[in-house]
Length: 68
Image (cartoon, rainbow, N blue to C red; front, side, top):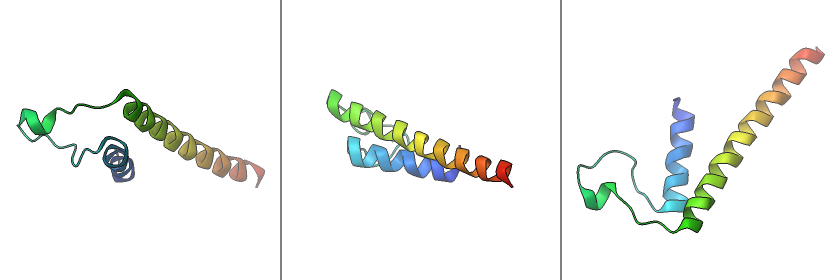
């Protein structure tokens, strides 16, 4: 996983799930979280939209390369 993807995942975890770090903390209180299903849904939607945006950008670049 490249740094850009890791950063986006961390951003989504922080923004939608209020998770400060995705690193293992060796503590149940820090490694396990109670989350509302709507927060999980919003995080998954943000991840999906992020992937769709990357795909669309990639598709546009390929299209430009083919047209040249």
